Image 1 (cartoon, rainbow, N blue to C red):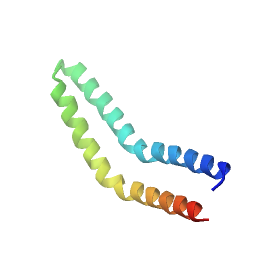
Image 2: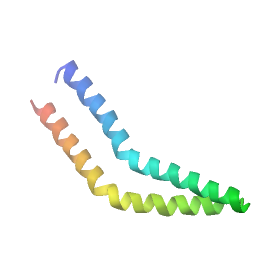
Image 3: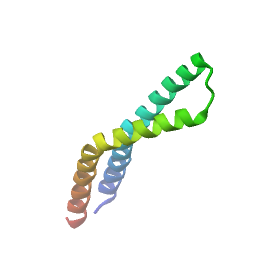
Length: 86
C-alpha cells in the first residue's frame, strides 16, 4: 500500500463520515429550529419539548437511513481491505 493509496482512502473515509452523518444532523437542526420557532410563538420555554422532539426525529431518521449508511460503510470497508491486500 503506497502513500497515494493511503491518502485516497483517508479522504474517502472522511467524506464517508460526512455523508453518513448528514441526514441525522440536518434533521436535528431543522427540527430544533422549527420547535424553537413554535416555542417562541407560544411562549413555551421548556427545553424538554425541544429535546424530545429532536430525539424522536433523530431516531426515525436513523431507522430510515441506517441501511443506506451501512451499505456505504460496508462498500468502503471492502475497498479498503482490497487495497490492503494488493
